[in-house]
Amino acid sequence: MLKDASIVREGDYILLYYSKNKKIIAKATRDKKIHTHEGIVDCNEIIGKKYGDIITTHLGQPLIVTRPTFLDFLTKFKRKTQVIYPKDLALIVFLSGVGPGSIVVEAGTGSGFLTAALAYYVRPDGRVYSYEIRRDFLEIARKNLSLCGLLPYVDLKHKDIVDGIDEKNVDAVILDMPNPWDVVPHAKEALKDGGVFVSFLPTINQVEKIVEKLIHENFLDVLTIETLLRKIKVKKGETRPETFMIGHTGYIVFARKP
Image (cartoon, rainbow, N blue to C red):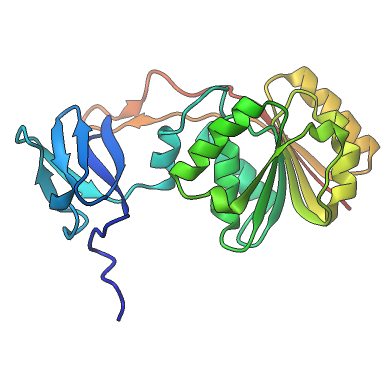
């Protein structure tokens, strides 16, 4: 018998929504109390409810029970490093061709934002091999990946990728590190024919150096992109661009192995 997907079941991750800026992710665990800024919620009153139902805290504050998105989980990740913004994550995933079943090598792991995005899209049969030289960063990433249930699709490796890539015949090599040019020969050896190389870099000087190296190693379709994101305030009679925007966060360099 098929389960009713519209019902909150024990073990489900839920999002308690009060406003755009007040949202809480929690796991529906029987007899558990969820403490929020708007009061305490009893999980026993949530389990069995339908998604979209309204519940109240012990203070009488109404909250909507809904499903968390992948982006909701990312906002709850613990951060010890500078992270890649969603606008850049999305473009990296799309242009690298990563999808279900892909085998991806990544470095460095940092807090695991890019790792999580890659793992989310290679599920259920793909794999992400993530290299990181800082063991403390790996532990933070491990906890973050566990939070959103993506750890089973990731191998966290305490190794400097400059010393070599263990995996062969991979679909993509994606780097978030200051010296990616030192990895290009290893990436070329590890990638399958037609595989994609991606590097995320903060400065144009680094971009010049990695592009020069990729061309020297005979990579094809070398492309550099910067994405800018501007939100729009939408209100009758007042619709206009927001005053502040997410400008430069980094450059993304793509290339393809012949």
